[in-house]
Image (cartoon, rainbow, N blue to C red; front, side, top):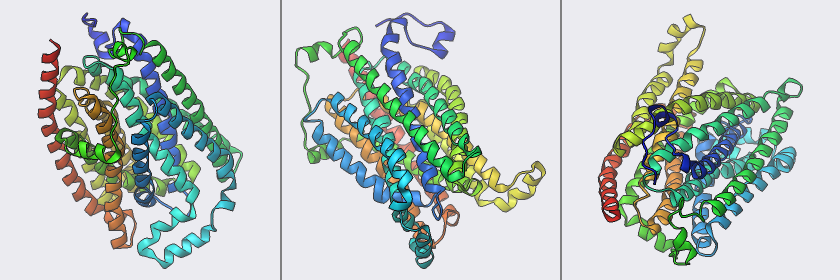
Length: 503
């Protein structure tokens, strides 16, 4: 390992040694492509569900419970089984191939035939009016292909971003490389987010000039999802290159000698044995609580924000254009925060980096909820600026989302991934699967369950349950921060033990 200190400027903007670039850059580019795909899917899945006729942001709460959550459990079961039969890279390539094929089929076959596949939209409206307490169930049935699209798109984040990439990175990254590598992955990755924003915005408006909004949206889908498939192919090629050139070189990969001699121990646990082992680990449980705390808190605020966006941008193409422009702004701010966070992770204790995200979410969330709950107070003040409370709440929600998600990607993800490194191989693989697939889905679905129950009880829309959501966010923030302090004690002790055994 190179011990030479960086120059002050290099330490801030690129704390990677020259000898490490061959290892760092392919991983960083994979992260960039994965995030490019994530935001192409993220913006598209929201536009296709929320902005459809007789639908809305409230529908997301029902999809996450009855669609995303069951599929996440099925994936975890299948992955646990397949990981004992096939090599990790085989599973990696198969998963990416599945995503690429599905979205190409959707863009070129399913969406163009949606009128044949879906029931009459008027039937959805009739069912909603006849059953007001359960009105948000019916768009799931009426637009069942869109629901399927949303479920598969949502899994990209938890399976490929949170699990496959970070498991691969944890496997080949050393403990002293992680504080420098991990934040920089997000800095390079911001380039992918920026590309997704520009491409999404461009292809969501270029055809709108000559075509109807409906036809323009269909053409945009073909371009956006074709870019997605090409990106998947590039990810596979880079992954193969790393296996051939980095993981066969002991200068970059510590496990090379062990793997060459065939002495690497594989973990063979059944599904239920894995769950039992994971949930008897206090360390993993604390990581679960941190993940759930973030996911529920952000979910409760994000659905309310997207409901406001639809009110301001009612069609698919308008919604998609707004989200594309939002992604561009998010990418630029992400670059700035990543540069700052790189130094936070390297130069401050783990605890400081882990606490930044809940602090940002708490402050911005407070102002967002105040803007939503007090529109009559805002309107007289905003009229002087030529704006309305709706425009202001959308802007405030965008600000909250940008700042929270950038700190989440730059600090929350980096600090959370670092706590896996001192663990044994079994907990790294099985414990991470539980946190990144099961716990993340439980976190999002937990927020969805809360909102679903409140929507059914009030027989209303998102605006009717805002006061309750505000109180629940405060409770989740307390749980989140408390788990961070507790985990810090265990992580610090494990790092000291690891360093002592290496000396």
